[in-house]
Length: 290
Image 1 (spheres, helix red, strand yellow):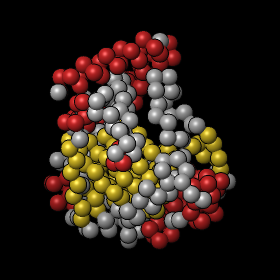
Image 2 (cartoon, rainbow, N blue to C red):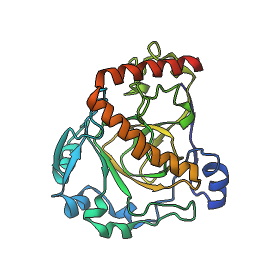
Image 3 (cartoon, helix red, strand yellow):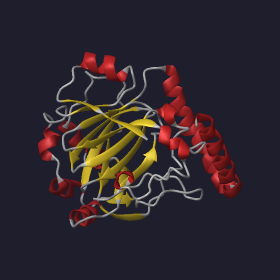
């Protein structure tokens, strides 16, 4: 993999952000965007336990999905308070995925400012909280709705791999899915992952690497592939913004209502033949970029 650092600024003016990053679909980290928000000082584990500690949440482990894994099916359930206690005690490879904490504690909406000066189109009904224990992993994928993302880290550090959408064949994208066939777990530890022998096109993939610290906001352009590893137990919030172009919006709608429906039906009715067809197509596509 050919990895570059992500550009980083303390403060980034809206015009420069739009010209150099938003329009070019290039990631960037803004370190001080969220530090003026009440949430930066206010949100912590004890505060969350006090307001949503009894809320039951779905948990996900580090096992990478296969041909027979239902999409977004939880591996366990706990109350949010129990989960916080677990990940606070030490390494725990469990994470919470797409938790809309604001449905249960709408007052939290007052704790941050929508950065409309950077871009328009925010889906203000759906800010999402992402929480993970030390060692938990979000496997390589792109967001199905093809939205732009501002991802703010509030607690703990997180290592992030990023690739433009166009790198999909070098990343061995599964057809009709948003996932890569490659396992990038602990990719930086020299333990044979990712497996370049099995996935040689990956050597030519061009992307970015960054470690997010508390207060950092990462702009992930629409369709960007991302793989995240929690260095510490921590949490982050994502704000989503629809693409301004009609083609971008239509791409997201097709993924949500067309692509996903076809994949779900065929996984249920013909899982093995469907998976075998996908694998053949994956490696044919990768061979073309070698």
